Image (cartoon, rainbow, N blue to C red; front, side, top):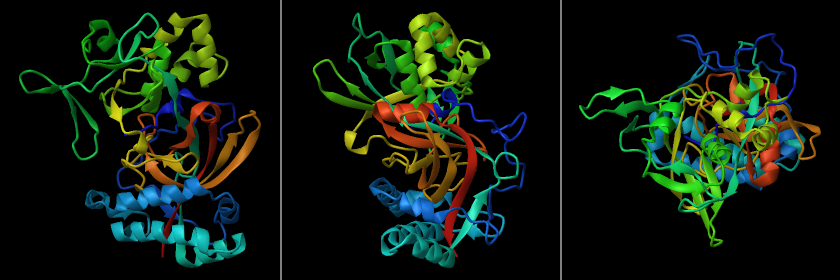
Amino acid sequence: MSLAAASAMLAGCRTTSEATPDYERELRAGEVALRPVQPGAEPDLEAAWMRRDEGLRDAVRQSLSWFAAPSSQQWWPYRTTDREISHEDARRSVLRFGELLDECASADEFRRRVLEEFRVYESVGWNGRGVILYTGYYAPEFEASPVRTSRFTAPLYKRPADLVTRPVDGTPIGRRLPDGSISRYPTRAEIEDSRMLDGTELVWLETPLDAYVVQVNGSAKLTMPDGSIEYVGYDGKTDRRYTGLGTTLFDRALIPKKDLPAIYDLYRRDPQAVTDAMLANENFVFFRPYDGADWPSGSLGRKVNGLASLATDKDVYPRGCVTYVDTEGIEVSGSTRPIQRFMLDQDTGGAIRAPGRADIYMGEGDDAETLAGGQYAEGRLYYLFLR
């Protein structure tokens, strides 16, 4: 799994197209998530080509690296409304897309050649009309300590031996009991109240909210007291349902909008209100040390790139493929901006379920935190496959 889950903490104020949208509405039996776009209804490919950068090129390389691994073949074929896409179809599509990024001398040429060589598919969205809710996530950076101190009191935990997950993709199954049977894993409140994880601490952060943010994002860059840098990343989660902290606090009328700055502001004023609200999220995430060269890593086990990697539900969408994201976001200044960019589908997250949700990886550091915190907008999602 991923970095991606911060989305459900984060929000903005754009009006949705439905009175009560159900972005987590699942596909019905037999339904698929992608359908071909009708000729003339393709997205603005020129705008996305103009925004190509080295991050996108690296995202292409990361996907191709994943496709080269024999283990990637198990996820294919992938079915759309009009065809089955093989592993080789998908790999060649990513490869050719990367070539066209640099072969084409102009945006017009790029559009012409993409439409000649590729078929564009659109998501059905949450409502069958293509509407996607886009949120954002980032890789946080915190100060930390390898041991508990008077300053660092909030732990991240190692993966417990009794956590059972599906070997092929890490999907949580439950807790293995001493008699060999499997039950649901305890909730966040039960874990914390019982102190069942004492002795399995990996690292200590300053506040429970800092530790929670790392759990939600799935990884972090940590500066230790001696100035050294360490990286931690996802190593499994429980089978309990994820509930966004921002949603809980907003529903309790404790914050004016569902974004991370509002949550931290409330924490400074009333830390108990925030720590109490954390318990509404029954899901719990575990960690292991990471090699910084591969940090931050998405669910494909490859490095993700800011504004070039996308997280989706991998029970719904194809892994590693070229997407076109069409939505709105914010600048660091807070002003709105269009997001019309190619991204590679390289991650997933506990809050990212069903065809109506997607999470944009914004990068690392403070600016990325701002961008992720302000990302909450509807849009459209497209995939590109060679004809």
